[in-house]
Length: 120
Image (cartoon, rainbow, N blue to C red):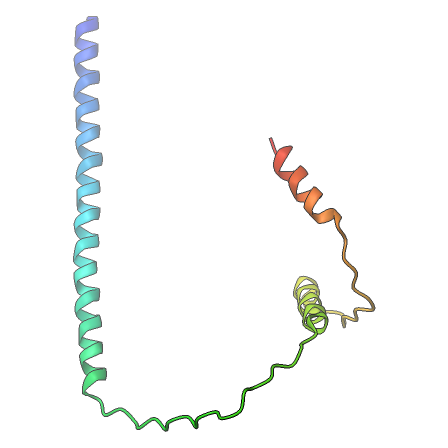
């Protein structure tokens, strides 16, 4: 078998491989278009069914005559609750979680920067 025969078989194999890949891609694209059309038709059918249903009357909200004063909320309690929930989720709820104190640590920014810079 000469070098030209080997190159010919290699070229034919390459062309057949490329045709198979692009045929598969065209089939996938066609399937996506068909699924999109089906989902749009189902969505229109649901929207039409909901439009035909009699909506319940919604009572109107009373007008507010006085300005509402917002209370100054303490975010520390909310922060402690989030931290406790995260610890409980990490632990799996096996042991009760009690947070005694919360303090800010300024090292998180430099740790994140170091992790990103020296990642590679």
